[in-house]
Image 1 (cartoon, rainbow over the protein chains, first blue to last red):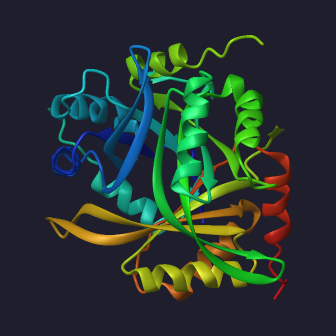
Image 2 (cartoon, each protein chain N blue to C red; image 1 turned 135 degrees about the vertical axis):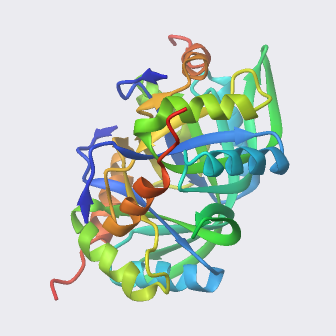
Length: 112
Length: 112
Length: 112
């Protein structure tokens, strides 16, 4: 087991369609900002301008190195058509060491 | 990016039916105890009185301000028909600032 | 509400089939290394040997006592056919006290 210090984490993002979800997921993986992204269908219930809404959405769970969170946030915003998308980071506090190392190796975005 | 200090979080709750899940989700959003609640179908495997059970359930992921956790817990218990429901909080340690602000604005339960 | 100190947590594991997911989940519950495991279908997008892959997988969310993480990790690896499976722990920082106590009571693996 590896005790981690908030370096690794999962980032939750929601998207309005499966196609958008896959575009964002592939964009993050291609840019080496995510080791793996899982996608699943959800129903979202929320208030918008005083009305309770219920929408079909897709949940992305992004396994990543949070050192690059600012660049991950920028990439999601670039690919997302919501003005205020969900982009929230949750800490991984322990894990199977080879898997955590794999996350670290995959998340090496080029410097530009 | 905003570094947060455990103010914001996600709360996991499970419910026995989609209808119950939506009742709880709407109840939390209506009471300004959640900005958004996502719902999805799961299979749950657990032991109850020495027997391994496998049940269809619905997972709620509640995006909220953990300052109000006690009131959120009370509201879930009020709306839930389990005696000991899952109500567990996980920290958000970083996030897209306008989204975190939106959570803060939505989670302002009236004082009574 | 109970303020917890990282004793309790959720552990995320992915598996290649529903059958494998249930085998791992039952194995953890039987060995008293998990109070409850939820399973749901996901699409995973990741890079493997330079290629972006898209696979159907199953997500396990294991509700557990992280004091036993090393034994949980060993049990998952024993039951899993991936060489480097996802086994990552996320902290529960607050919860409904009877539910947290239930997790504690269920997660008492025998000493051998």
